[in-house]
Length: 131
Image 1 (cartoon, one colour):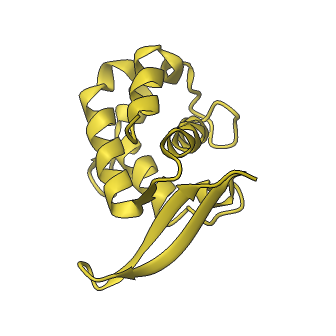
Image 2 (image 1 turned 60 degrees about the vertical axis):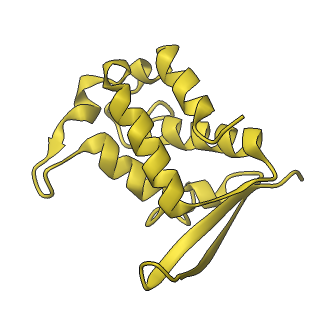
């Protein structure tokens, strides 16, 4: 199984169409996306994936499957001209990863910041570990 396969399955099953336009809901887009990312990491364990690759893979899948996303998440954010799903995806694997409810703090997920040679900054390495 490849990283992103769980996302494809959940999108095409219509699960994301049930997302709510509420930031603090169990069905908020970012929460559903985070939970699918945990499933993807678990399915690919013990493989590691870095935040750069994860953002790119998930963005491509989401962009190709916009018909399976609710309209509100495809709206463009005025401040940066990007679709909301693109912003939520990037934040999931980067700036919000270590938020208390973020991907890096989910059960079974190991997340570690490392120096990113290619971009002269940091990236995060994610891996699902049992226990």
